[in-house]
Image (spheres, rainbow, N blue to C red):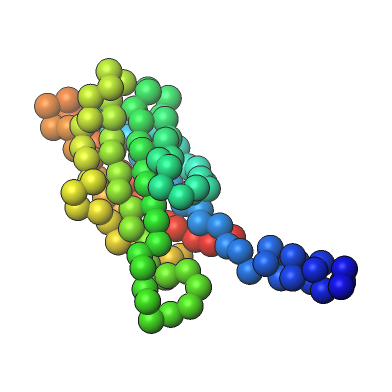
Length: 134
């Protein structure tokens, strides 16, 4: 009986998969002046339910991401499609761009890039997201 319980416990832990996001942020400043200063950040973040993942750059720009599996009732196990919502927040706390209304659909192990542009400041932030399971 103990062996059976141990076997079921080990089976349950090996079947469980965690969702991770590989996130690349490239912040370009001074585009309007012909001068480009680049700040890069590369990170891998684990997603826990619908709790936002916050990534802060050196200049205190913050990206908040929420990722979840898209329900696919035709297959067993986790879906191969991930829905990602994103918000870019300035150092003062203002929301610069919000993708909550139009979430991004990203297949597992596939990169998707989007750009936040702040033309009045001559700033562009490229965000690349790649979801994967571990």
